[in-house]
Each structure stands twice: as structure tokens, then as C-alpha cells.
Length: 426
Image (cartoon, rainbow, N blue to C red; front, top):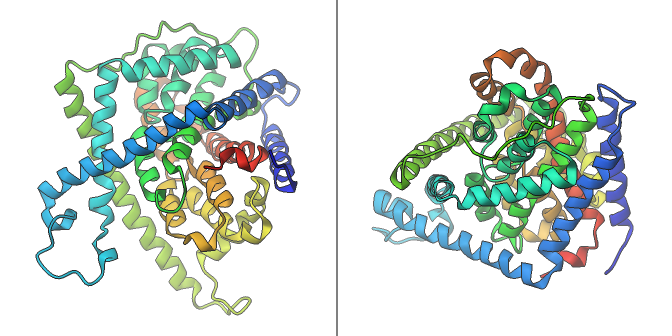
């Protein structure tokens, strides 16, 4: 195992991020030292399990193969509906093969399939059993109550709005700290439907992309728990409400699960499509306005350059070499302002020769979360519907939750960066 300054760099980043969250704490005298050890210990343990145990690599290889299989199967359905636009037989001679890739037909339909498949696996109790296993792990290692542990575990595989539905019967009984934790973990993780899409985007530029994306979403759950408890500590005598793991998220049959899962996936696809169109257009508009400014360093001022400079220190703290920090900082800035989907697209578009594999891997962990400015409205709207009596409380916590959720994924990246690099070598 090799160890160098870049690993020390990440350790410094862990300390700085914990300190930044402590500065925002509602009770600075109550820092959760035991939880810190437990949460980071769970992260390190899971990393060693997934990447250090040879047998676990078989599982990650299976995940990568599953992504390829799902992409192939989805392509068949897409081609059936859209014909040559979906990659079917072309009615004309193709001069530019790369031009055949259409994001709307290659990536977005995969979300529909995964959403329906997730609902079906939940109905068959397979996904529910996996979720309960993670809930038990978080309950025992981090001292969470049953309802909170289940919500945290569910966030790994379902969306941030679906997760509270699982414990809907317990929402009114959660403490302020537990509500905040549920919000932070929801913003620090991604839904399973989009997880596979991200893996597909990075497949050609990052070895074991699907494995990294899956592990990233799992690892950021305990990171979100830790940072939420640093900022809003649990009060004595509150929290720990017991849940019997009997979810209120149910389907009447397998067909009902597929239909409702597809319908939910369609809403996700439409939202992503609209957001991508609007945000990419807005970036272009901002760059047009900035083009009137004088050149800086011989180059035009763009939103990408501004974000890169602003987030360069954070990129360095997660373990990125300084010479790559500006480009990495740009990806982090895009994630926060333009959604993680845009960030993954930008990261996947960077040629392998222009970014080291370590930096690309660390950024995969750092941007694999739902914490972006647009998610604030989604969080408030979704939780207000599920627990309207606590809407004011949600509003008072949402911006802190955004900060904690964004930092949580960066903390996960720093934990990965603090470990020997050859642990992740294929």
C-alpha cells in the first residue's frame, strides 16, 4: 500500500469540513465524537469491503455488467419506439458515428427502466430486505432510531421524497434533529434510477464506473448523518423512535409496481430534461454577458472559470492535485449550481488525457448527491406535502441542509482520497 502527501491532503480536508459544520452548529458544546468515529469507521469499513476483498470485486464487476445489460435492454425498447433516432438501423449513410449519440434517447430512457425495476424489486421485498439490512447497520453503528435508520438506508436506493414515504407513519414523531438528518441524507445521496445513468455517462472514462457510483451513494449516507448531527445535535430525551420496518410504500401487484414505477420515472425524466435545457441555456446566456469583460490571463471570463477558481480550494481539500484543482473546482461548482446531472455530463466529457484517474474518481464521489440549489424547492415542496404541520421547521432548516448535503459528498470523497490509491486499482 502506497501513501503520500495527497492522502494527507485528504485528511486535512476531512478536518476542515468537520470544522466548517461545527461553526454552524446549534450547540457547539455537543460535538458527536463517538458518532464521528462510527460514521467514518463505517465508510472506511465499506470501502475496504467493496475494494479490498477480492470476492467483493466480483459483485462490483456484476454491477458493471448489470449496467451494460440494462443499457442494452433499454436500447431495444428505445429503438422499438423511436427507430433510427434511438440507435436503430440508419436510413442513410452515417459519416459521423459519434453524432448518433442522442442523450434524450441513450440515457434518459434508462431512468424509466430502472424506476420501474426498483418499484418491482420493492414489491417483491428484495429491495426492502437490502434496505432493512443497511438500516440495521446504521442503527447499530451510529445509534440511530429505527425510523431514522430506515429513512437513511432507503435514501441509498430511492429518491429523497420516496424515502420519507417509507416512514410516513413516524414523521410526526421525529425530533428536529432527525428531520434535519433526513433532509441532509436525502440531499447527500442519489436515487437508484439516476445512479445507473451516471454510471453509463462515466463508463468510457472511469474504470469500474458503476461500482464507484454505487459505493458513492452508500458512503454518503453515513457522512450525511454525521454532518447533520454536528450542525443540529440531538437533544437529551429526544429521537430514537422505534420503527417496525413495515413500510407504507406499497404496491397492489407486480403490474401495479411496474406501472407506477414507470410513471414516477417519467416525472423524473421530464424534470431532468427541462432542467438540462434551462440550465445549459442559462450558462450560455451568462457566458454571453461575461464575454464583454476584458480578457484575464489571455482567456475570456466564463462562468466555468469563475466556478473553477471559487471551488478550487475545496477540490484540493478532497485530495485533488493543485494543478487539476481549477478544473475539478469547476465540476463541483456546476454540481451545486446546475445539478449533479450536468456535473456528471461535464465530467464524462473531459478526455482521459486531460484529467488523472484519481481526480476523476474523487469527483465521482464528490458530485454523487442531490445537493444543488434547485433541490431546495423540491425538498420543501415534497416534505411540506408529507408533513404540512412542520413546513416552517423544514423552511428554517433547508439551507443548512443544502450546505451539509453538499459537504457530505465532499467528505466522502476526502475519506476515499485518504486511503491508499492502489486499493482502488483494477
